Image (cartoon, rainbow, N blue to C red; front, side, top):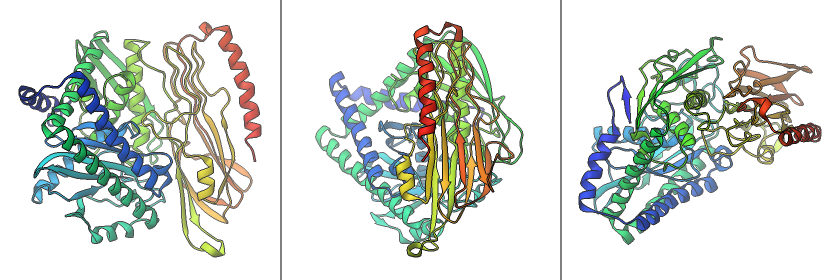
Length: 583
């Protein structure tokens, strides 16, 4: 991976040097390598499962907004990630590990028994809700690798409950800012750091449970990796991890050679930044020459006032996710990025620096993924899918309990929602899926209704919301949520309210995103269409989300008669489902 015109950073050179030195002393047969790959991934999978089963926060426990992995002792690059962790963290967490490495060097170096914690979204990637824990793993007194955990904490201060502040103009309005600190010192939890964390959240019990769940996941990872090293020895495992990375790079370069040489330009827009109602351009020039791929975003809009900015680390991670969608057979490690050069000048909306707000990073990375898909479709229509619905629609409803047993207790319902996926050369897009930045799941309504004073009066497919085509885009959804408490305040942070998900190769666009909220018997829309805070709700009033469908693929006139018959039946079923979905 190389990033220009910033300070050149090439993990490929470091990886090649390490691989050469390692290969001189070790070799491994294909069967053993496959076994070790599975064993290493199983360690990350078990860490994921431990967190999901232990966390207090539904965004982690139910939606699986988290990730664990094994990272290189020298470069910090991703070597192993679990299959259920969020792919967006694969690229971002390598930046996070490198940040922890650098800060540790300034404070005496990495020490066995320590665990570093922080939520820095600039060098560490993503946004301030995502807390990263980095633990050095030592073997026979020497640093062997890093284990790391990332997870979305429910609330970490800031101006609005849940932290997706759609009108933030600086990072401190979004969440408390925690630089890299030792949350665990010599295997003892630092109570002073914990006190600072719990003082800066509306939900201290949730924070306590999520932190302990992440620490438990790292403990298990240490135990499992120690057992594997006892069985196969450190040099063999180290060689296997470096070999898996090298092979991922080789496979990635092989995939690139199958794309016709050329420069493919594609662009799309964000609705606005939540502060100024002006569209923001995301522009990509994808350049292919032999086995070299360059992703040039230099014509993208400059950094903006509102919270749709993202950091360089997050941009690279978004590109990784898009490439993995295009080339699913390439293993999930840093080798994918070793084959790619990035041109991302500083000061863009996709390379912002502190204190620019970055809380709505999910919306911007989805647009980056869309333009990569679009550029790939120009190179090879069979390579890419059309655009998915393109927004997580972060919604929070929060207030105080009024019943006698819990009177005055704070509650915060924060969740994200699904929509239609883009069609592709092999078939229609998925109806009501989750965003392509992750393998997370949409929290079930039963969980949300059990945890919070709300009732879903509708949860249904949105009829005809997918784009037409030889293959149709998947349908979005309609969610209607009624408040059961005396009063509450809500916010929405979404996108695709002005610029619909695009079809490719002649396919039609999906429907636009629509958010509405009820006041005094009337449903209203936000002035900025897709973003608003301070929405006052009274008991019985509702909010309603109608999410976009995916874009279509190919000329609609080429759609087969049998599929058109299925479409008619699906429309009928969707209509009846909407009626039946009301309680």
